[in-house]
Image 1: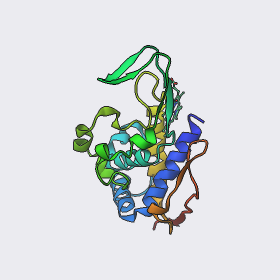
Image 2: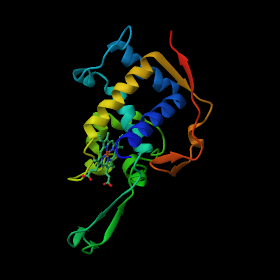
Image 3: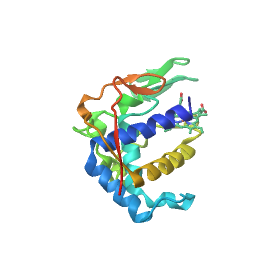
Length: 196
Ligand code: HEM
């Protein structure tokens, strides 16, 4: 669940978002083709730095569709978050990642729109580090974070270099619902075309 289900859901969601935003998919394809002009024979660790736009697309997908939409903690001590907001000792706290990722005070009036530019370095710098926590934060964050980032990129680079994804399903018709991980009420079907 922690490893396979989260990563598989994430890859599917990226493909859904790209199928619904063909101009963004074309930009990712151009980026991948510039690194692998003929075919993807193998992807090495050093290649990881060569796909800044794909990285933004993955982060934006995990913002809007975080595979783990909420997590829970229990306070060890009484904690004052800010003046007037006090959490007693041994209180169970739910951290609603899905809602946090769509708060308009943080992400702007178009918080629900799929916009990879949210993860341009200059835009990341403007936000609180905990505004985005698809992999949680702190000492008990995702232990497989780097591994997940690597597998997601290898899979997506390989798929997007040779295949084009499309769908008739519209972005605004997506209804998310909790399944094992964050799921779709109706999973958008994707058409797959082999690129010339
Ligand atoms: C896109 C993929 C992934 C996402 C979005 C994700 C997200 C998360 C989140 C939000 C947590 C915190 C859970 C909590 O506090 O209740 C977590 C914990 C964890 N993740 Fe991931 N994860 C992913 C992939 C992976 C992979 C690939 C592995 C292993 C290879 C992994 C192993 C773990 C483990 C063992 C924990 C528990 C860590 C602890 O409690 O100290 N995850 N993950």
